[in-house]
Image (cartoon, rainbow, N blue to C red; front, side, top):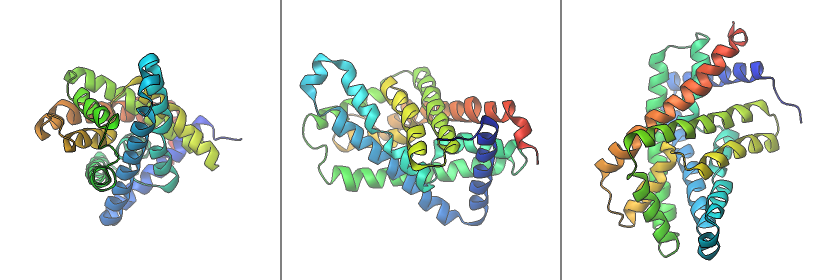
Length: 266
């Protein structure tokens, strides 16, 4: 299976970023609908990771890593769908828009506008999916899943701000590396494998992904977890979002643009 070179991957990322900014300039409704799709896709990965990862409580009790492995193996379907179908994901765009900005295709204002609109669209898609296709369907209405989703949500708002921020860096470093690997491939198998490996790693390691948390925390709240909206925002969404921006924009987008900057010359 042939793949692109690192320089060609960076150039492909710049082309993708430029296309995303053109959509931001010309058709915000399409951008928002695409972002809602991505929020739903990531939430689909979230519920699959819960159902598979927490479905073997006896096995998990004797082998704690089993749950992490199974959840990690299931979750990447969300990014695979996002990448292959071209949906707009905030965390992926954190990296992809940096090479196009470094090439001079657009300025920071359009980058921030895209990130803001896509973030809001991801949130809407995640909440709609979570409420209608998980909560109302009763997928997590009974144990072991009910206990799991409430525990996951509570754990995500109980960490220190700094811990969530650092875990956010780790999560989007992995996610954007997955996007870079997917850009290197031309086949469905190659793109899926590129997405799967790094995303499985971040889930198994317990890093914090702000869009995934738009599924996990609201679902726990819908089931009665003792979490307020303000607590969810200040204790998780803010630090995980900032960490994701740092991990994606700096460690992947900016690093690749700097290392392979000759590929960005017009």
